[in-house]
Image 1 (tube, rainbow, N blue to C red):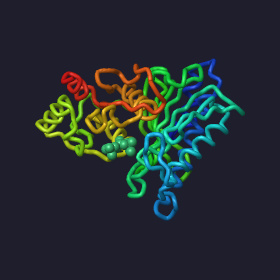
Image 2: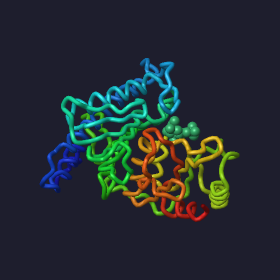
Image 3: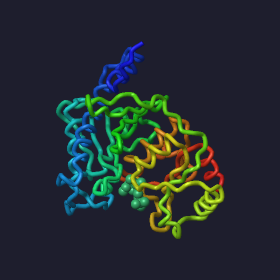
Image 4: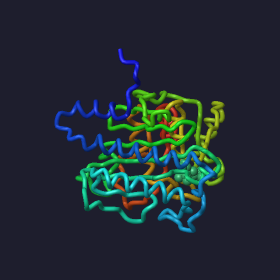
Amino acid sequence: MSHKPVSLTEFVLDEQRKYPKASGDFTLLLIQLAAAGKTIASHIRRGGLGDMFGKTGKKNTSNDEVIALDEYSNDVLVETLTASGQVHAVASEEMDEIHHVTKHTGEYIVFLDPLDGSSNTAYSITVGTIFSIYHKKSSMLARGIEQVAAGYILYGTSVMFVYTSGGEVNGFTLDPAIGEFLLSHPSITIPKTGSIYAINEGNALQWDTPTQEFMAYVKKQSFSARYVGSLVADIHRTLLKGGIFLYPADTKHPHGKLRLLFEVNPIAFLIQQAGGVALCGMDDPLAIVPSSLHQRVPVVLGSKEEVEYYRSLL
Ligand code: P6P
């Protein structure tokens, strides 16, 4: 019986062996994603000792302030993925246009939120990289159901790599001593019900009636409020502990705030593969035909019981 924990590389190679025709391209792509995550993690660790928090004076397509760490994370990811030879195109929340890879092009399209919640890094609060992978035969505005894999790299009290390629969700923790992601959370399943809600209550006066009714319900049930304001942190806790995350549409955010292709589809895929439920209004996010690259959508997701109750109020 081996006492050595399984590394991400060994895990993905084992997965690859289940598909005799697998070329190993996907394995290399995931390993390169993890390598980029390690580089970003080492930079973030320096915190205020570095010069990464400064504003660049630019705004991205979604009108978010761009800090140096956003550009750095985006560049590390795009360069690492392009060098892997496994990528046909890369789209990023930080790039207005799609980056088509011509030299050493590959089989996969990757959507990235390079450093979601990046403004939190100045306060040493958990942030994350979100990725969503399609085969190049998919259009650039394909439905989320066509994703071949999705996941996030969480830069928190530990650095974690959490992903699904369909079927189950597995979590790996970076062992700083050896610089390897090791399997720490095999086959993650979200509890069927929880007692935590995550929503920005600062928007309460703008909520629609179903959201107001749901929030009255959770308060009657004495749920706990936990809202980091950093999507990967809130999602990781919801995935492991259960409960519900909401960024619904409201009068200030008529289409919600989160981006369908870069945030909602990858997270919804993970939540569903872990046995949870994800909603955009009444719809499954993965069934939405995107209208634009940076489209925003309302989203409610988490434990089946809570999300189904929310759906019943719509
Ligand atoms: P609000 C960060 O900017 C982000 O995109 C997600 O990480 C997070 O869930 C959300 O926005 C927080 O938005 O309006 O509550 O600050």
